[in-house]
Length: 285
Length: 317
Image 1 (cartoon, rainbow over the protein chains, first blue to last red):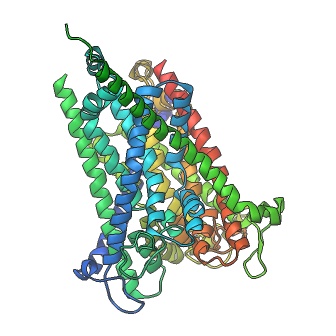
Image 2: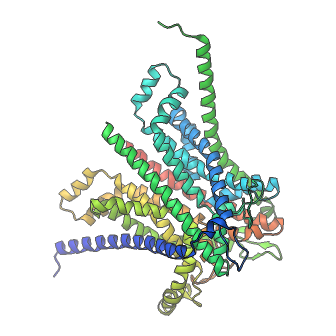
Image 3: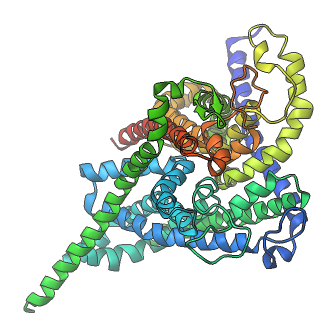
């Protein structure tokens, strides 16, 4: 007969085993996805990817115009979004702090952080594309900028708050205005943290597909015109993967591998920078 | 003692005002973006809302030829796929979070934690093509025939598993969504469990409780609000997720009782049809779908944030 004690031990063991099983399932999914990606992506890898344009159906080609478009729009997106995010984060950490306005902005920002990106795409469609009358790279960059703002805002505020208050007080005691303290003390002290935020923001926006569908659309040809539709990797992957052509599907897999590898690389570098930062703090104090 | 240079002081004050103003303007812009999103969606959706009125959300019809549009099928698909995703991802995420905080050997804690977080960084389109090319064929060949054979005869749920195994459809979309939101739920829950004071757990062990008893009677009650907040954050993602679903949902504007049938969600309808939509009423109806999605996800995410904030405040106090 079971004693109460064996029952408790069994129950304990059963739930711990379930918890382990859940973790293994999660890791198995990650491995399965990365494995397929690498297997199919490597098969599609070749120099043509980086030297030729996206092909018409049924012929081979590369992804040059899509890679260029993705790089341009992500870069423009971060150039527009990051300064806004950093300044707004500075406001929350330095000026607003616990005021009602700052609390409201913090809340709205956290909502925007997890808002569906497709909604942001529709927003930019309404205010830019409809007004311009056509899809354009600049509209794509703007929608990515809107997605980059919440990430940079959040990390900037967190990183400024991590700077020891003594440094700020010392600067204030020397008679510096807050702007001088921010630029000469807080930003340098929080620099690697803020850079981490930027890397995470780039990682976030460079894989976004949904907002680009309604803003930059796609372009089968080489285009550097910011006022015209521009090819980009995520939308090309979307279109090519769903096509019935084997060549297009192979290109989609290769593109998917490139995009995932760059995003994982960005996320890992962000993590390494953050870890080094924490190690510095640990040994410094 | 140095004499204060009045011109210098005035310049410093001017810089201060400019800098303060610039940061304030950037912060206000965040508020304006949210307001702008709401207003622009409302304006874009207005023609459709005016034309169809309230029945827009209660009608199943979606006919671009006769320009008759109703949002019921996408709403149904969005809700059902998200429910499937949460039903699978919440227990699994809970298990992963428990494993990471309470069971895992310290040496493995960081690598597994990082792996889970990296899974969260993978763009959703990757989940989409993986779902379409790898998961869907496996489901079609092995899982769905099994479900049709064994789950279909069970009274009460037999209507959920009818029809041929398409591979793609509501069930597959729910599964892909589950894999997608799993890392978010696991990571949030882990952070929440980490806020439980060790003293409370030690007291439990001191009374002779097993590890599971400490988890269920100390850790979970203490972090309940945060756990619910994390779940709702995951739900917000599942409801609004576009690309992962668009690949595997089948894009059929109808409501089937069978989970194995193709369907559609709000976001995948917009992604599939927006650039091909001809006519103002069609486009406007799609934007009206976007407005609905905005309202639904905003409510869920805001509720999640309020819960997580309450937990944070309690942790500080």
